[in-house]
Image (cartoon, rainbow, N blue to C red; front, side, top):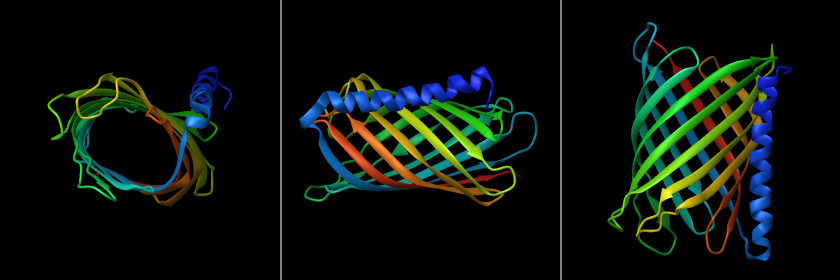
Length: 233
């Protein structure tokens, strides 16, 4: 990975990880440490061939920590503008099941731009900017949040193995009467291996650290496993 662009991409991920560390350090002893297991699966299926294929999207998640279980069901539809850019929009249902309380629901309308491009030497860069409009039966306000995701992955030239590092920053544009945060919300940083289990599937297990801007501040250490499936007609 020798190009200046590749170095910039890698530097952006390193800086995001350092940012998470500094934010955590600033909270010092007030940080609430937690442990979790996150599992997810994302599938995309192209519906047609051509210069601008349309595709379906679905990702589902289950996240278990010491106090609650969170779920996400997020369908969507998108179009490939060219070989490296696609545009998507959809809906998400995100119920939370606290161990000692009733289920809490959240509904989101989302749209995103996704960049996916090889940068040489087996490396590939991905970036996603996603906007969410969030609703909850617990309040009347609509919360607006932006998420910036950057990912650097590497695959071996002849073997179905590689590694990945990614970071995602969450920024709220408006708080709400049901608990959504305005300003910096959270940051997620992940590192782990990649195993290609089929031409259309891969699995990425690894370590995920999540810093949440709450009172008290929370730092979640998670074992994360993500499956990815892609299909074409």
